[in-house]
Picture 1 (cartoon, chains in turn red, blue, orange):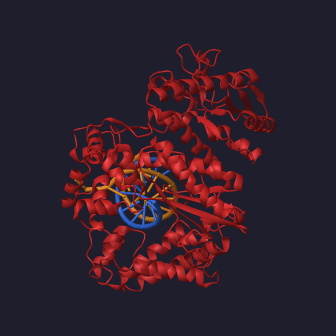
Picture 2 (cartoon, rainbow, N blue to C red):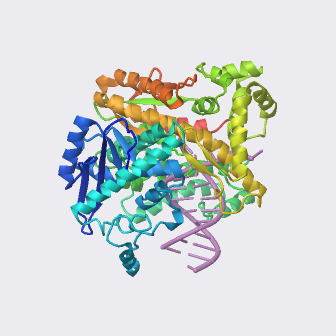
Picture 3 (tube, rainbow, N blue to C red):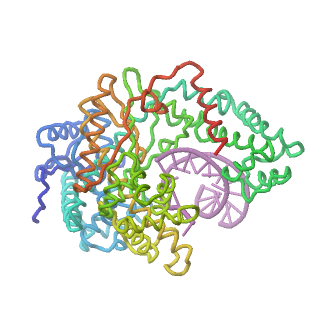
Length: 597
DNA sequence: TTGACCACGTA
DNA sequence: CGTACGTGGTCAAC
């Protein structure tokens, strides 16, 4: 078969695990693949990486790289083709097992992919697969991933060959979709490598501060179940003492809370925070309840159990990372890595001798809109540090109005004061607005879209299985989903290209990315390399944006600074006092913040 | 035990 | 007629 021009040597890493848990690899450059045990495989990858810097084809980074990186922590592959990530990009959805990716790469219908063995007696269907890796009907045999068939070195080498073949077909499909898509696969694959590293390395925490913050919200660490219950009752009592006669209210039951509030004259349709915010003055129980909710969040979700379960002995918070979610393609993480409440952020702190380089992209979504729509006038506005200023000038409105109008156009909110300014936007930036309207229309019709970088977005089945046209509300929701997905998804692609570039260019400084948060990066770096890392992060943005946008005249900006704690402001970041005042001060500031506006 | 709903944290 | 994600609580259905 004629292979596409990959631009660099091609390597492959696949693995299988026998039923007794022993892992074995097939590793090598294309045409020279050998079956090896883990330590030897890691050594081979290291040597080949150094000598040839190949693009490594893997069925998935998690399967192929995670165990190798445990064996050899210094291993850092730079170029990867992750078949699962390529499949998600090219064909949509999240499921991307080898059999499914293989089928899509070969143009075989997804509903004909043989089901993987389930472990019960139907496993005997494997007998229908015949003796070979590829079945008579063109599908991969079903019992590969479980390790049931990959029992010999020859079979493992054949498995590597299948990965190379699959990647070759994917690459051709990607190239056929346009010049941006192969680079997107490269970038998404790099993000998948980064996810393995993020999961392994974790986010550095200051354990003493975590303990203190949890203590301030949830009380001291309980030594027994009884103490835990007592602590919980004390928290509840702070609310219930405001409602004599209703002390038996279950604060965790919204219906009971609603009834309790009604009894003291607070009449609300539901007990959501933004509804209760306006009722603080009606009765003191409202204030107490909102404070309780904040403490309860930390006590339950980010309390001692969370600390003990997810923060290691090395004071690192670890979770599972994915390179793309099911919809727009953003990275996801669990165990609180992506939704850590702001009051806990002072606990995210550099290890001794290190600092955090914190960088976030400014106004990324409107800038992305300028790229993906090709609107030259809107692109002109991105030359400003504050994009809303030139837009406001062009529209003849206040900056605040311009901002709301732009956000309304992108996210679909039509209520409020944005109406007039929206008309101005459509006159001033018709190309950008038409791009959003087109995405909305495709969503309403249940059609398929691709992001700027080529990710397939299917709208037909989002939010349920109801057919298009049957439910106008559902159609509109699909439209909003689609309009948002082309922006959010493209922003995610740029972000990952940036993160991958930062990972590659700052590694020689000893820098490691420890958190990715949609438009924000935290890089952990030895103190003496802080300034070099800042420069590297900023240069990486310029570089990644130019490559991602293929030279579009759109400017992207990053607010980049050096901090010891995530909570510190980036500019003029002086280390705040680290005494006991830190914690109580932050809690106070947080609660007073939420009172007005 | 599972799934729906609520509620709320992040971007 | 903002969207996306993850988490933990309760409740109803199984």
